[in-house]
Amino acid sequence: AGERGASIAGDTISVDLDSVVCPRLPICDPLQRDYPVWGDADHLTATYAASLAPIVERLLVDSGILS
Image 1 (cartoon, rainbow, N blue to C red):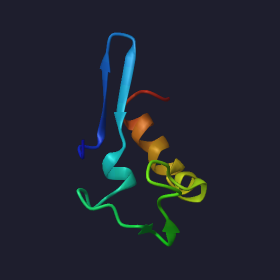
Image 2 (image 1 turned 120 degrees about the vertical axis):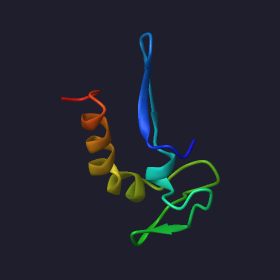
Image 3 (image 1 turned 90 degrees about the horizontal axis):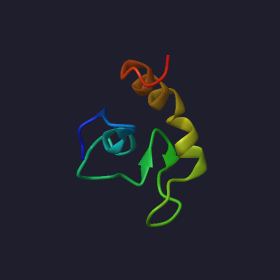
Image 4 (image 1 turned 135 degrees about the vertical axis):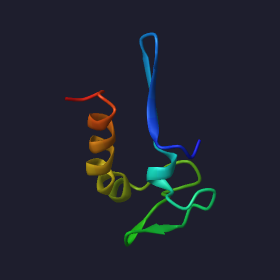
């Protein structure tokens, strides 16, 4: 956790998004870029998750998972 990147093992691709979701790990601030982060103890708010889409897309492209 905390290391931004992706790994491939067999047919499984694992993408670590911890540092994308919470850039100041191990602290996860309740607000990131003016968006509330947590909808409840285990789920991101839809608006925060949507705001991460360009970052996640770039990570997947850079990792060779998406073209």
